[in-house]
Length: 121
Image (tube, rainbow, N blue to C red; front, side, top):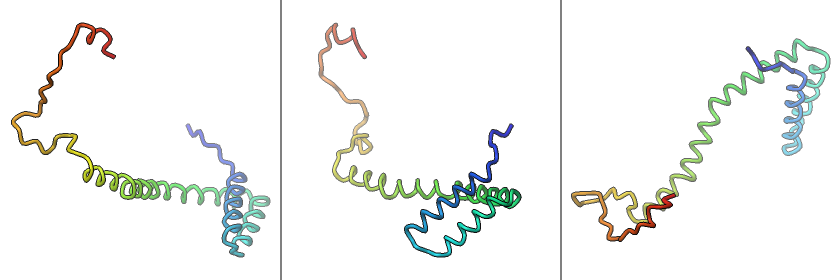
């Protein structure tokens, strides 16, 4: 069952709003002509509105396959990778990966009392 209800007039209104915002920052005159054309299509032609909506959703689908990978790659290489390099430079080996001894266990010399086991959490 398809939960999506097609609303081409709202989709065209969103496209027009986005183009107007882009025009506001870039002052590209062609965008105003496209906005006018889309507005006329949205008002007078249901068939063309549905086709524009279908094209819009196809573009959105293709972008949904590409953009998340780019964003995750940027987060990794610009944020996580430098943090890991700085951590390796300034911190000691907390995972004990460079352990040359026969065992990875640490001997702890601590005395435990009866009260230590009552409220462990």
